[in-house]
Image (cartoon, rainbow, N blue to C red; front, side, top):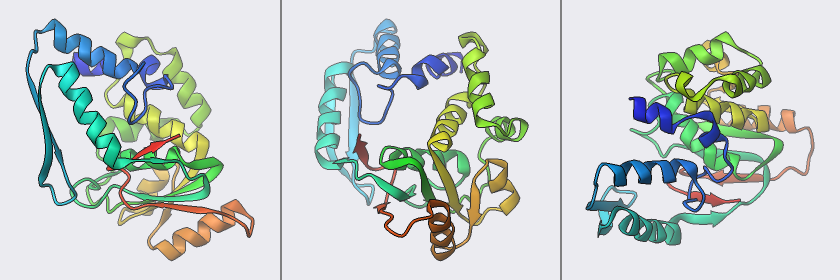
Length: 233
């Protein structure tokens, strides 16, 4: 756990290269490579699966070279250019990846890359298991001001990184850029604990989003599966 917490420190997460699809200059990736090489990892097998979970590509060998080759294949199939929009709709691709709010942040990161500043992200996720992490939930219950929350993260020393801080930091970053409407089966109070707007249908979510945007000529981008796509900013 100490290794995971050290990898997820604020400085790494805050780095602009610490984004989906970026290896060059990504401190998270570089740190994991360093750890792998230090313990003597000399052979890996990575597999790429399709939407039906069937393997369609595999690489094996050196942990750096083989992984890079696998990433090249995934990028060739899954990367798209950002389509800037006022409202971006995203999902986690359904069960089992949308079991809770914690996991749903992953689908929101794809939307973050293509939503305009002060826009709206509509995240559709069943989230039947609720928040997904006690520490994650408590972080947002204890501090309702996102600026203060981010400042608290900034002040925290690397060795003081708490459980799930990386996810909390990413989630706060997303919400500082755009308002999030969460379409789920969650209790409204739980959704509001995370400073999101609850909705229980796409119609309700779109009505709320249009009211927030407040203009007639808004643009909408739809991401059917936010965890299976790389949005190039």
